[in-house]
Image (cartoon, rainbow, N blue to C red; front, side, top):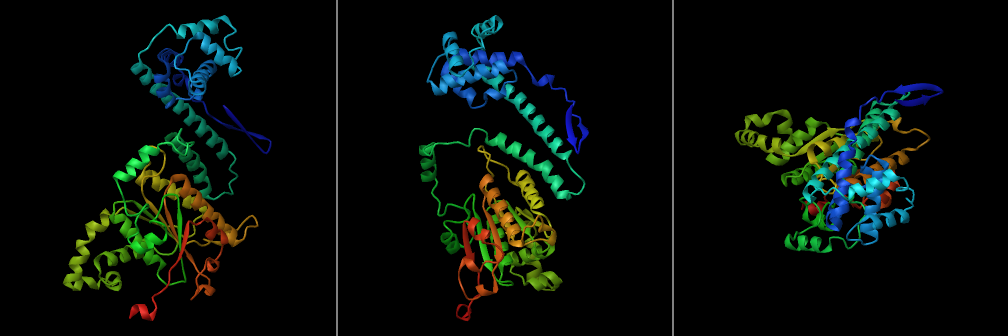
Length: 431
């Protein structure tokens, strides 16, 4: 039973879950026997899957920690009882084998000899049990946090408290063991891969080749790309063009929209693809013109198959927006073997304060927008995906170039990977 105290009163959050089937001393013993007797070749394979904490019993955790130390730190290729005892002393586990039953247990581990293939199968089973125990701990911690809810919180806050730890947990499981790397790790593999598959740009092409080059090779992983413009210049249409181009390449796109509805953006997309005038689409007059009618209905399957997800987020909090992005990643994108998102794009149109309720705790509007930008930057880096965001220019930005004319917050400029200014065409360009 997990006991939670709130304002002096005891709140009981029940965690009466029978975990007896998640503890298998025989399985742990068999894995230890395998790694102790088959040496470095098998140990390194097992270490790719298990860590000391994946064993439930403390004595087994310490024995596996000793094995890991001897193989990885001391360079041992084979293991025996004297070597294990030496490793125990080095790690401060002098009393681990003081008792007779512990010494007999160590000797017994060297007596049974499971095959390498069987040891690997049992290693996977042991990791599965460990994963289940960790998941229960994660959910128990979440239950403890939820027990502190006062009733004044927004619904999105509660949803985030449920989603975030679970999403963090699953992300950590996928990426476990891949965070710390030498700069030279996988050098040959990486260089061979890029040389065998040369590309024109590093990131995702926007469909605007000149802009791709100007921003450093398309929309790169882990970047926040900002486009600034005065109102009614065409930020949303520019973003929709990019969404269409990226989706035509088969990559999922999430369009987070603070301004326009799903219906408006759908009609704009139909107009972009069919070349039929937008007002003809919106008013239905395309049906009286045979060529336009055919173009619209021919585009139905094309648009239906495009992997573009539109979400109107007007009035929603930062926590709610991040929750939407996490769910989209999980449902439509997926993750690679390193725990990073598969190729995709998130578009945020545009960065602004949603409502006066967002200004709280003595935080000004520019601080709240800075917090939103920080959240996007962290999200892009953590899941290794590109984000395209638009923002308004101040009046002073008309006819001028420079980041100092970005409205609302310096943090937008600080945290973005690149910043472009979108302007209407000059009379000379129209000519």
